[in-house]
Length: 416
Image (cartoon, rainbow, N blue to C red; front, side):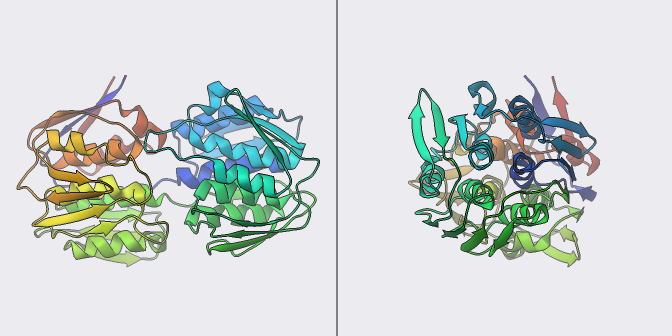
């Protein structure tokens, strides 16, 4: 199993290109199941989750060709209705095939999903929505079985904001009969990216990016060419690294509008940030100020940046409070940061972080995707050499992260 070795104390300088967004790419690739023809997607990150999605689509009967950031998917042939456990267990986003399969085939049998250990993340809202669209739902032997001759439009309210639930039902409703209204829908940029792609395919969708999304069902969708949006979480991770290391970095291929909450908080820490179109320049030469954050659904502060921000606050001047409102188990990186000398106390869904003069290198273990990134960030500023174990989580969501950091001057390497 791979590990990453980081020698702390280097100042990061230079330029980095941000990859395509995993969380946008996954539902867009899966949306190919709704079409008859060859879809071509560019700016697709080369990640383990993308590979897992390609295997899942191939297992369902699609033909998938991947080459240097471009993925071509032909789902025009016979499509199977069962997504098996061995494929779905690796990645929670696999549940996104449920809506398209029922919409296209009239039935689906999908294993309950896996993914990172950061909370229960149930799919009950997906199932409740599909039932409202007329699907018969059964849970048997670890599988969801759904069937409907044809889905019919409905007015659906999400009790809790759900990104994948919004995506699943938006895809399903695109081929449903009649009009579907999704209320309390997720507003993330990835939702808008999926809606834009579905609209190019011929779907009739209004309101994506707001809390009310209206979908007028159509009889069929066509194959398209589309480009995956930049990854706001990867961009945020590099912005954080610049502040931590008192660096000077320019990020290319970003969507600054998707990073508003994070940029506001980083400016409060003392960072200087300039935006030029799709490029962001960030530098930090002074002390780091303590800043409180509270994770919220978009456009609030993203839960996927909470662990990384905690590292920043661990060496800031003063005390900060970090409140996590999205996932109940997303402080499991705290124990590893404490091993590196961080002063963090957790009470319920809040963590009190008292800044210390420096972190100390240690051997640590990654527990989930974003925790992996946070431990590497901690290694960049720790005194000594940090060893981050179990970095397979990292490969699910960051494309060549250690190589990008090395190009900026970090002393970092991957060891098999």
